[in-house]
Length: 154
Ligand SMILES: CCCCC/C=C\C/C=C\C/C=C\C/C=C\CCCC(=O)SCCNC(=O)CCNC(=O)[C@H](O)C(C)(C)COP(=O)(O)OP(=O)(O)OC[C@H]1O[C@@H](n2cnc3c(N)ncnc32)[C@H](O)[C@@H]1OP(=O)(O)O
Image 1 (cartoon, helix red, strand yellow):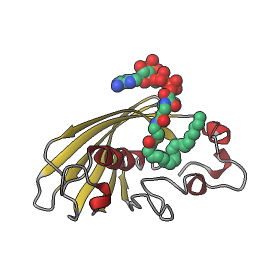
Image 2 (tube, protein in one colour):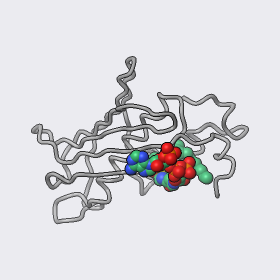
Image 3 (cartoon, protein in one colour):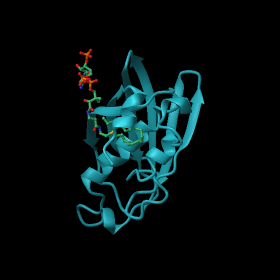
């Protein structure tokens, strides 16, 4: 959790990001993902169960690839807070291994791999309940100056 003093007066980071398409509980058209974070020494993990609908369909019965990329991005972004950093996605690479079914409880997991200064390297997987890995991703996140939050466009 970044120190509150880094944020605009009176606003927590959660309030700043209160309409995040991936994780806001109050964005009616968002994915409303809820993550469980595990932080043990260098092992930082974010996990969510994701069960989406035809609203997120690409091929009939399967998730749209852009939605899958969003899931990966969102999961990896959740690793930045335990690192006590505000960071943005700089590079996202997705391998679409198998079609990802809608209406199925998929497991979305992200791991922090390593850090080089401002550069945070993360990975993520989306897994079918039968254990098949459907998609994998790598992400590079860049820590930003928290003061930039003040310059955010409305
Ligand atoms: C200004 C407004 C800021 C508003 C901030 C708001 C919120 C804060 C964010 C999150 C917290 C809240 C909620 C979560 C929200 C969303 C969750 C999902 C996360 C996202 O969805 S977030 C949106 C998508 N995201 C963007 O909208 C970023 C647009 N972008 C930029 O704003 C800049 O791009 C920035 C700041 C990221 C970096 O800018 P920069 O100028 O500081 O750094 P630069 O670009 O130079 O790259 C640095 C070094 O990465 C190396 N590099 C590049 N590619 C590489 C690769 N593939 N492999 C290895 N290294 C690579 C270069 O080679 C260089 O290396 P070196 O420094 O060593 O030369």
